Image (spheres, each protein chain N blue to C red):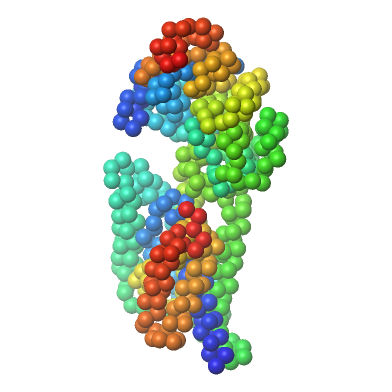
Length: 233
Length: 290
């Protein structure tokens, strides 16, 4: 579904990705793990068109490098960014509905709301509240919900557990599994190694902008060298 | 005595509503993308000349040409964004300077072009349904073109408020809050920016047409109104529609009262005096969100 070939990118003057190649097949959950500064976030930014890149990014045969960010999103490749990037002064409902804004003219475009509410019932209770008044966990739910409103085929999540109470982390990971079961492919960037590898099918380990190991999630999780050398655990 | 006071207050209100609408257009663009449109007054001047030309050659009344000129200015705003501003946004070197000088240069260009085409002398629209008419209520004189202009300004504010409640209005607000995040959900922010410029220009266009019904029309007429609009936007709070309305009326009143009590030539001194006081105590303006 997604194929990266020899992808390089600079972020704020630093070479953040150096010749990364990876593949994501339809229906998978693929985790990208690695220490801080390994280039995980830049990887997702590169796929969603937010940083200049060299190399190849192919999504179902289309070259994403030639597309502007909003066209990439319309292709069904959607990023839930680091820091969530909600619209803080708009209501929860407006944030969600704007996810379907690009599909104006499609009478069914608000249908994913049902899915969002079944995944995150809390959001339905807080529809009229401003996004900025939500707790960290609720904001993450809203960010995922907003992305689901775009009807993604590849959902990319950047550190969804960041700044969230442990109890809610489990809820969010469970939601990611349910989203995959509905047919959405997931590319997950996480600092929390154990949790990410638990729900992922396969994983790539990044270190200073390069893929240093890849394999099934179980293999990576069981490899003591990986944990010590690349993840600082 | 009451009649005199009322006369002053109403005079301030009538002018203040025009100031408010001019400021609303400026505030809309600034709030959306943090770019000060230094050519805002020149857009208003162009709308006034459009009204003048339509009146002189087509015999249209200012009220009739309102939609035409608003549409023209909308198109011009979109054109300015697509042709100039989008390019200025994409430069990688000294972007802040480029953004200032691009609209500053545009202002000088438009003013020069108007001078070249229309000449520098003052013109005015002196026939029409309302031209030169006044109503008198309880000893207070109400010049009808100004009353009509104020009513149109209020309707325009209601229109802007209605737009802000639509789905497009939400997208506008979202773009203003996080221009990168809207792209991630498939919204073409360039399109939103262009429409924002169109809307801002159309807003000042409406003010210009109505102003042309009772004010002189000349290539330099925009400068003074733009200056007051900058003060109004800063006073009301950047990006706030209600702030522009309240601050515009406030400035109109301050001008009118100063002119009546002290000396007409001092009216702008009070305006800028109040502005400085507000900046000292409420630097984000009366209704500032930032």
